[in-house]
Length: 311
Image (cartoon, rainbow, N blue to C red; front, side, top):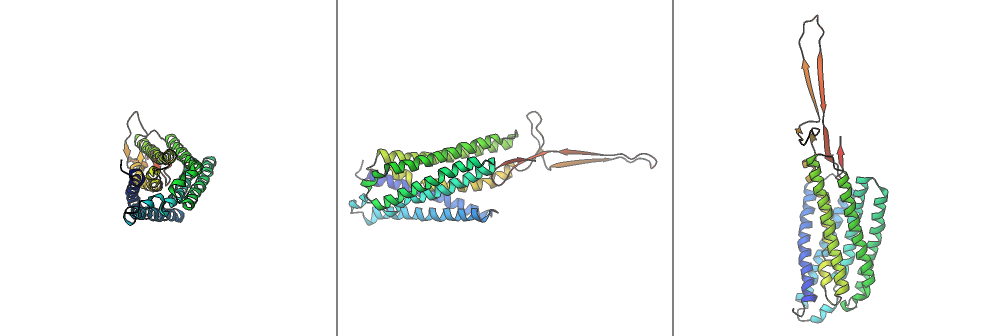
C-alpha cells in the first residue's frame, strides 16, 4: 500500500460516496417540491433545513479534499491536522440524525398511537445529538488526528446510542406495518415493500455507524473511520426524504376499492357503492314493487403517514 492510502485514500472514498448520496438527496428534494405536497409548514421547513445542512456539509468536505490534495500537495504534514469540515462532521451528522429520528418517532406515534414508543425515541435521540455535538466540539479543539483517540469513550457512547435508535425505529415500524395487513393481496404486497424499506434504510445507517465506531477504535492512526463517518448524514436525509416521497408513490397503487375476498380471488370494483335498481311496470290497479340492491365494498388506503385504513 502507498504511504497515504490509509490516511488520504480512505478519506477520499468517503467524500466520493458522500457526493453520490448528496446527488440522490438533491433529486429527492427536487421531487418533493415538484409534487407540491400539502404538508404543514414544519415539515416543509424540515425539508429545507436538512437540504441546506447537507449542501453545506457536502460542499465543505469537497473543500477539505481540495485542501489536502491540491493546496497542500507538497506538504504531507498537513494530513496530521483535522480540517474544520472533518471536525464539523459529527455535529452535522448528529443534527441530521436528530431531525430524522424525531420525524420517524412522530410517524410511529401517528401509526400506533403509543406515547410510550414516541417517548423512547425522544429519550434516545436527544442524548445522541448532545453526544455527537460534544464529539465535534472536542475534535475541533484537539485538531491533531493523533490525539483524537482520547475521544474513544465519547464516540462510543454517541454511536452506540445512534445505532440503538436506528434498530428500535426499524423494528417498531416493521412490526406496525406487519400488524396493519388487511388480508388483501395488493395492500399486503405494498405493506411488505414498506417493511423491506424500513429494514434496509435502518440497516444501512446502522452498518455505517458501526463501521465508523469499529474503525475509529481499532485503527486510530488512520482515516478509515472518515470513510464511514462522512456519508452518514446523507443516509439519514435520504431515509427521511424517501419516507415523504413514498406516501405519494403508494397511494395510487393502494387507493381504490376491492370486492370482499372470495377464496383466493380479489376483483376490482370501480366504486365504493353499487346500486342496482329494478322497476317493473304493472297495471295501475296493481301493487308497484321496486327492488333496491346495495352492495358495499371495502376500501383500503394509506393516509399521509402510511397508516392502513379500511372503510
